[in-house]
Length: 281
Image (cartoon, rainbow, N blue to C red; front, side):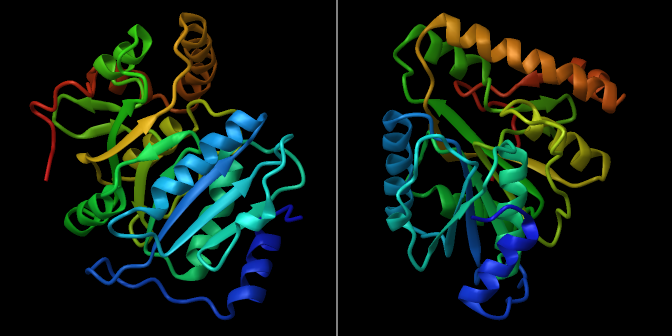
């Protein structure tokens, strides 16, 4: 079991030898996909297998996929690990921020110069990695993709797409305020940040990450051709619970970053149903 970033790096060194250097984003890239995983049921395991199936069918495959098992109560079969899929198992639950940080450390150790983030209940389009690579070649930094609902025929799914709840927000000057880590990539050379582990749940740790990036003048762009379908529970109770959780951690973000609320008030949702006026490639 791997309990810390140091243990994770030691494990990767033992398997893969000396770390590679990070090359420029020039068409000969080493791309890592990082998925924090917390499984509660066999249904969660089925969703994980589905995202891995979608990643196996990418037109531009990942050079490495890093699964970080955040002490899931439902076991992940270790047999899924292979040469290009590393399974890291944490011995206690730390939250997705810690899981992503562990994945970032491993990706850098392997020499990745682009790191893509995805959730374990998502289905990326077949050209998702290729679109992220293209966007990073043109504007290195943080790239946010378009996140659709896997149940767009339902009222809740339509709500998520119209209001872009996992699609981020855009400021009046056309710059991105934040994106979501279910569909996001970073250039290793241009983004020297980790996720804040003071956010223990899957709520707002990605927003806070982007707010810090903006304060550090790291460029963020929206690339609507990098498409991911996200699984949502169809009921209104789940939607209410989601916003209740977001509200708790939004307050924490506002207290930590005084710029957040003024930026939020001058921004708008990036709707999945209209890309008019957005920064595209």
